Length: 406
Length: 225
Image 1 (cartoon, each protein chain N blue to C red):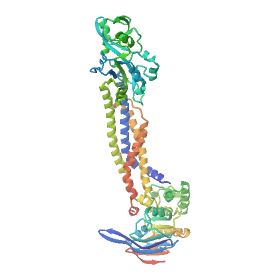
Image 2: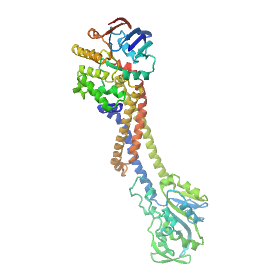
Image 3: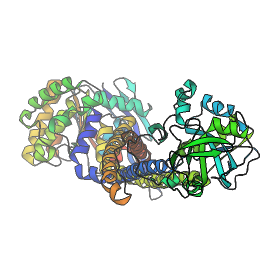
């Protein structure tokens, strides 16, 4: 027999009281775990969907206009190509894809079109430094999206919103937007004269409803030569992780590119930030409520238990139990309740999230195992906080008073 | 001499006035004595029993136990003395309801942090000694009143105390069981040389005392042997 065994026996022999005592804290933890489990997956989905929009950061020269995000690179002043390498050689996390561009309005076949020089991925791949940076591939890396998820996004598949890098674009080749192709009667395989040089149309882009429909894309080197603007670009498009943007990616880029304008689609960032903050606020409010409700509930249970066991406390004190022993008895009980409440709350909350997630939020929720640790820690903290005062009073009971209740 | 009380006074405040529960009580108890304390209700018998080892603090007076003053020591030391040297038997048995017979008996050893195996061995021997070895795993509610009091006695002696304080140990028992318990306490007193101080209303129980104290209005009115 030990004092801890005595505590466990008492808990076991009074199971109905134990269940009552556990109820509030278990349900409280379950609610937090369920909300968190759903909101984490929801945040991941929002972030992934936003990331799927494509390039979301634009690096422009200081004097460029950004009235229209999608056309701000047209006829903009230029910045050196070196800036691309400056970004690549930095340790900034969250830059997932990058596309330097040089864009000018030119006359082709007597029509005004937008000529955009781009660096195809095959060219990026040819640079060892860029390879090591991992900036390859049009799709976002998994690492970009919030972790703990392996779910593939089925969100925005809308081609209108995708502005992704071209895999290959050889010199003397070009790709025409749908509108410009109609305007100039271009088809794949035909040649087109651009500023006195022949380019082969390798592809006609499907209609996107964006400014890309009016563009002709050619290799950046060719466009730089044609326009006589060597080693300059008018913009660098960056596909940044939405989470990284909301965590200050823009500021970091501005630090390494001080004489540029680094801008983003404000709505994207604010949506991400608002989503994250809303979830955090909901969880915080729940946490505060649960802390008080759970703490009061456990405190009430322990206080009732102390009163019920006054005689027992008196007997133990009479037999030579120190005040600290009585104190430990109830603290240990609170600890057991806290651990049990945390585990049960985690299981219940996770189960609720997994079952209700698809119905309520249309998402698949998977158990987040680290929440088990947090649930136990939170539950124990609530339980101990609620028990301290009644336990303190129990230890102060006068044994003689309690024995006289016989 | 194992226990001595000198001019023990215990006063209570009640409705604006002072009540003398113990009024300059003095006595001496030798090792191995079986002391019975009698007196009418409210005479201060139980107060004296509780006051001797600090369950009630004195207003004034000295208590000397085993050659040392214990009325002026702190709660921690008094608790230690109770744990190691004193056993208590109460009228209501004071067993912990959710513990089995053997678990109840082991509590004093648990408080002394004696290893589990040793606790079990000693509790088994004591329960055998009091004739309850076949009731080890029974809960108090599954035992008769006499059996419950025997468990309480077993619990009071398992840690080999120097002195047992018994407050009306036969108060809840019928005459036959009372005699059984009294005989058992006498056996403990004689075989183990454990000093017993027993508060009782019963004249029959009082006769078991080798030393008799009679209290009235908080004062010792007669002392007999």
